[in-house]
Image 1: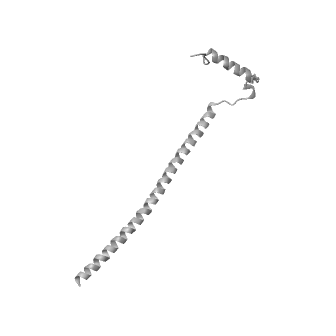
Image 2: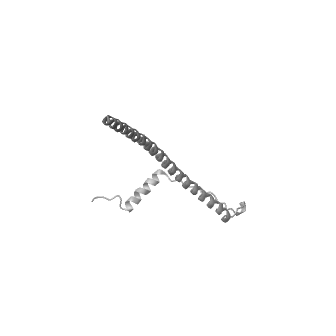
Image 3: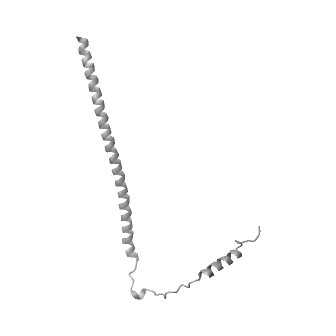
Length: 111
């Protein structure tokens, strides 16, 4: 009779241990998923902080540049005449590059 009681207690303890073991594995899995999500969120926040600081730095430099620049008026501007571009023909370009090739010895005869 005592052996049966000990056997029953041992079996019930084993069942309890295995049940708690599987419950702890499940909670560990849930915690791991939560930690992974929190790590991703932290990385995203760090990136946002970097972007915000760069934006603030840009705007501060822009505000400081307003103090250094002078407001201009139309009489302060210098107007230049538009220079016309000379169009070179395709044949002249090729002939010139061919002649330059001979003068720089790119096109050599023999060995």
